[in-house]
Image (cartoon, rainbow, N blue to C red; front, side):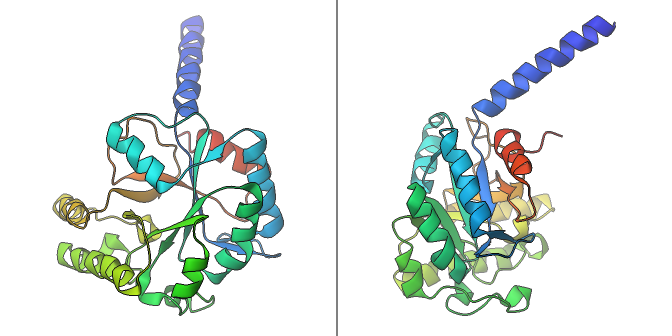
Length: 256
């Protein structure tokens, strides 16, 4: 019995490593700061080390457009693809993240809550300035711009009508600001409705808004073919992560 269990464990381990080797890690960042490190903030030096680690292991940053094409065709991406994303459009993404990404010739995405463009993170005590339309344009083409709701509300707590209205405002605001964007969406706080009827209505609203992909958190890698284009998972990269923790997340995601 012990030999059987050991063999079963070995087979399971090989299967898991094979599965994750073909899967896409989507990294979720928020803020980059010259020195500060906390749950939402990665220091410039740590961010440089993280990108250096990716580059040394031949990871290739991809764009949302590339990911959408792969999901549409139900075909895997090239080996060692990684999607780098930022939430909320903090000014520090422009001043500190952009130069580092450019130095490594890597791409990224910033998900923008459009009601607060040029203001501050009102959902978190207005502690950080957010980019203006002109600053968002300065991110191009290293960054793609995408959707992060209009009012930065947790969709877990909204009804179907509120979700639909917020999505329409999000896309309309991008159009009114004349900002180029990809129709991909990141749920604020990773939240989605628990009620099955409301969740289905949300997915219908996403489709009707022309949104091609949507991202939760989840902390797992994304195998191909993608089973649900509105439930792609991201890895929460924290400033408090060690390099060993960062490496484990990128390679394996959350195992259990």
